Length: 331
Image 1 (cartoon, rainbow, N blue to C red):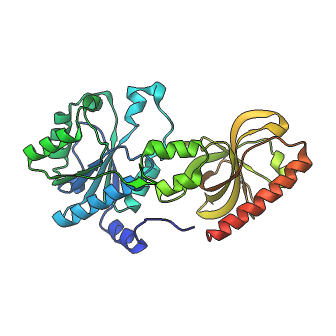
Image 2 (tube, rainbow, N blue to C red):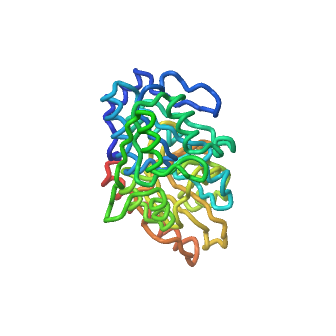
Image 3 (cartoon, rainbow, N blue to C red):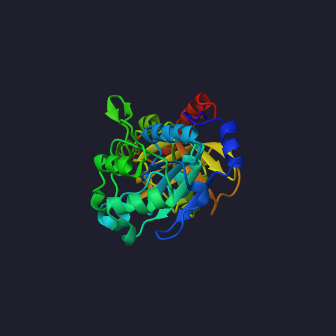
């Protein structure tokens, strides 16, 4: 399947040889020496969408000009989980996948900061001095249009520029990246996914949306119908809205075309919301294996059927449509 906007394999390979790494950092620890003296971007980077990618490209460019590393500082857990747990929503990209994507788009070092009450109590000036200046010895900062930092997000873009001037660190502020006349944002990607608009979300992400989970025990009803399914449990990120989808499934280092059903199974009176996926052409046991599902297209709504025979006819039609869609995308 075509990947949009990723650097070449040669570029990524060269960076790996130079020590590309993810570092886990607690406030008060010394920063890893390899992360010092470079260009820096700070943020949650959930989704690593096209707006983030533009920012990363500028960080990489600035790092090349100053002869230092391209560094992204991000947070785990997401600050909202501590500040407003009742309003926290599932992430688009779990921390490990977020770091992987940041590296794939060209970042040399990802600093994964453990979010703690003491970190969240730092004023903008304290955060800038302790982490940006003293910790990372940053030579350039790049941020986006909606950046805020420090206690109560008191660190506006204007404050960031003032702190940068005082420390002799240039600060580049990038405008929003727009698609269809609107800024690309994590919340916009989330809204599209919840509406089942996975192709629109892919436009904003620059790649298909990826869902992570581990195969658990199911009813094994699909097997009796001739279409065995893997029941995805321990899901790590946001589940798209209900529907039947064409997906590409990664398991054990291999990719398979798949048809995924998200939602209840009203034909058999099951109201629990589940993620079930049938891997086309796969024969084997998937129980307890981690799966990654790339959502390519939404085929139809979930709906009740009069019985197993009508359901099987619909599944056959779904599988044929999935196969055609994924062959179109050269899976």
